Structures are given as C-alpha cells and as structure tokens.
Length: 430
Image (cartoon, rainbow, N blue to C red; front, side, top):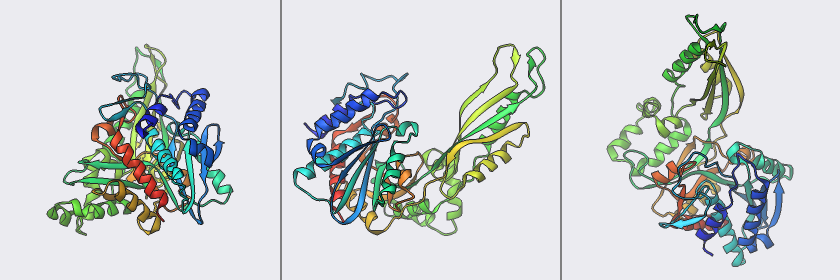
C-alpha cells in the first residue's frame, strides 16, 4: 500500500476527541501496527496516559529526536461535507477526510519515514522518540504525560518537531515564491470570564443600565481597544528572513531602524494572521444572560479566549483587560491559562537539520521563522529543549488551510510524499 492509502486507512477510524471513544482509539492503534510491521516489531511501544503512544527507536549516541503528531480529530457535526468524512477516500490527487491534514498526515509521514528506514536497516544517529498524543484537540494530557515521563527518565531531546507552520505560497502580500514557515514559539492560551451584575426584576420596568447592557459596553470597549501590537524578536527574525523574497524597495523600508517601531501597529491594523502574530488577542467566544423572556437578567457572562503573545505575561494581560473594561460592576476573572512558550533557537545544529530536511523536500522554499498563533502539544517539551519547532512538512494551499477543522479537509498525495522525504532526512541528518 502507498502512503496515501495508509493515510486513508487511518482517516477511516473516527478518533473524535470531543466524544472520547476508547474502542476507536484502540482500533487506530491496531491499524498502525498492521500497516507498519517493522515499526511494530522493532520499536519499543508504550501506551501512556490512557491512549497516547510513545514509540522508541534506539539509535546512536547523539541527542534524542522527538517527532510528534496527534491521533485525535475534531468533530464533523453541522458541517457540509461532499461525502462521508470518515470514508478514507483518495480523489483528485488528494486524501480527503477528517484528520487528513490535522494531524494524521504528519502521523503517516513520520511512520512511513521510519518504516522505510527500518527496511534499509538504518540506525539513527540518536534515539528517535515518536510521541503521539490522543487528546490534543481538547487540550488534554496525553502529550504532557509523555513529556513528564521522559523528563523523569532523564531524557533531554536535542530536537522536537510537531505540527505548526507549513510550506505556503502567496499568504503574505508582496512576498514571492514558496515559504517554509517554522514556528519558533507558540502563544499562550487563557480563558477569562466577564460577569456583569445588576438588580434584576420584572422586564416591564427596565433600568437605565442592565447587566447585559453593561456587559455589551465592556465587550465593545475591548474590541475598540485591542492589546498593544509590537514586533517581537521572532517577528523581527521573520522579516529579516523574508528579505530575499521582498521587492528591494519594500525590503529597504521594512528593515529601516526608523520604521521598525511602526511595523507592529501597521501589521496589527492589517488584522488576520499578520495581526495575530504581533499582539495578544482577545476573542469573545460565548455570551449568556437571563432565564426567562420577561425577567431582567441579574447577571450576564462572557467568555474570552486569550492568546498570549511572547513577551507578554498573563497577569499583565488580565490587568489590561480590567483597565479597558473600566466598570466596577463588571468582574474580570482569570479562569485558567498558561503563558506563551519559550522561543526556540533559529541557529545551531538542530536548526540546520530542519533547514536540510526542508531543502531535501522543498528545495525552492525559503525557511522563515514565525510565532504560531494556535496551541500545540509541543509546548510540553519547551522547558526541556531549546529546539522545539512547529512545522508540517506539507505544501498547503489557502483553500486547504481554510478547511482545517472544516468540511472537505484534504492533503495532496504529492505533499504527503514530500513530508516522508522531510522526516527521512531529518532522522538521518546530524
């Protein structure tokens, strides 16, 4: 069977993390064993934390390499797919189905690389640890438990690779050619709850300021006054790396010392991914109030999803929210959260291994560091390794990027094969 057929077979197992199904997870484990017999027979297998997999391939004396992917996928409810999202089909030169890109594509690319190298009796320079979490999509504990277990064993990786950026074209205005976008860090994630309170009572006698009205005013102030935008050291590296692909006049402007302080606010106004990379973002995700049609709500609540940019600290972010709300009758409470990850190195042996592997699979791509605005399981390794990189070794179109977590998610067969080349090169390069 081909790599694409293997991916289709794994996509057909519906490991939906929002509705945990131990039988589906066990079936996926078994299918991996069936599809990759050398991985099954020659690697050390451990099931960790209720469903995560830790597979160890013993190698030489070099520092261990951790290759990550997650086994779970997001739900498909209320989405309009052109066919069954779990039928595991290959059409139009792509594998189509839930999880094809996020993240079973990476899972298969890693396993294909290891299986093929085992068939050649290759011995990696150092141990290779395959860490496959089972609950990443619900911010679960699978990968965190693996990281803690390895820490207890005294294992300190020299390189960690997980999902994140990809090979993209045309995503940045004025930048020509393909870019291999590698995450050096990822934002922190937090939940903040706003609670507005009022006296309540009968709806026939409404007050001048109701609890929902206070809450709405607070949310409007937050949208009108976002957190400050600035160019972090990672984004500064990204701009420098883009230099060869920028028009000379544009390059001269964006790299001028006098202009740099203005770039953050400018990108912040652009919005979208560019804006998210240069500031801590605050998104309203849930709003609730009231219990009956004719009763004034005594309380109104809103949930804010916060993505903490590197350089910001969560207590400062919450305090800025409190100052922006500026209403003593609206409580601002941090529910939970964690800080942004440490920033990994963009130099040294591990970074050069990444560059070599990208060059082998996508020779025309320019390697560019960036800040990942989503969260990944890689964050659990950031305290133990200064070379944690967030990168999917696949060429992805804008349409495919938009379909992640949406209908008709897909991964091109050619991109999957290039991903196998990436991991083969990464494993064998010192």
